[in-house]
Figure 1: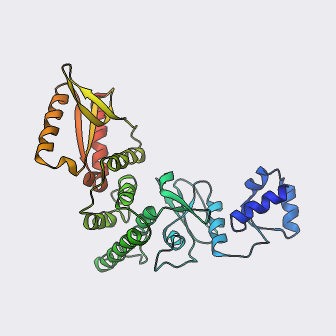
Figure 2: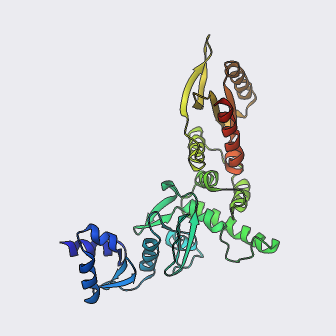
Figure 3: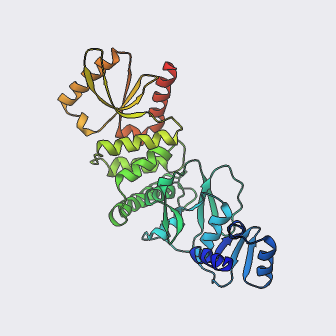
Amino acid sequence: MRDRGLIQIAVDQAGALTAAQALGLGFTYAQLRWRERAGQLRRVRKGLYVHTAFSDSWEQRLWVEVLAAGERTVVSTQAACALHGFRRSQPGVIEVQTPEGGSHTPVFGTIHETFWLPRSHIVEVNKLPVTSVARTVFDVAGHPKHPLAFQNDLLRANHVKQMTWLVNHAIRDHGMRMLDLDRVLASTGRRGKPGTAIIREIVADLGVDYAPSASELQDLFSEMLDAYGVPRPDEEIDLGTAERWVGRVDFVWRRQRVIVEVDGRQHGAPLDRRADRARDSALGGEGWTIIRVTRAELVHEPEKVIARIRLALAAAA
């Protein structure tokens, strides 16, 4: 029964498995060593095996790299491009991404570290954990094929051209939405992080006519708060003065009396702007601090948005 379970793990993982997975089925280290001596298992490194019934393959090597790097490791960058089936990608490369702070030694390929990899940035392809299409595009922007792409204007321009094609390809052929890329930028893009400026340039160019819905903008804002470690506020709250109801606001930190309104295009018409000013004035008179944020600010200047929010929360503390 235990051997059947071990085979099932190997089937799911292209032949790769860990000692921890085997121990979870009831095996002992002595039993694993016996199977290794019998030729059933081949030890790759301490705690990591390949079942010899499975032939060597690219996917098996990806699994070995993912398992070797530990929990929350995913296939990323060029390897993720190949798994997603992007044109111009080359199956065979081994690249994974893991949360920063570890001390992992690669087995076959390259390990990248990241400060932020939420569940929403991970999908499964052939049961392998892989960065989503949008996160893959963002990561590739930060790892150009030419090592001097960020130091030479001509090489950078060529990288921007390639990335523009990749963004268009991902939208047209792989179901990526501009909102998906916006969300990755708002939560993961940082000043100085390689590739962030390039993706922002492309989004500003290709996404000039994109108008997300109010709920999409609110999701974008919430994911940004999570990435920067800001406690989530209450959402969609009715507020008013002592005399009357004023309106429903997007986000509220009640104790600090801070409001954030995430403005879409519906707030661009003259009458809408007038109504917004009147409501802000009424709530401001009641001691509320109102911060208005646009999609462009969320995508291109998330650090500035977070700084404004933290300043307002700190002032009220």
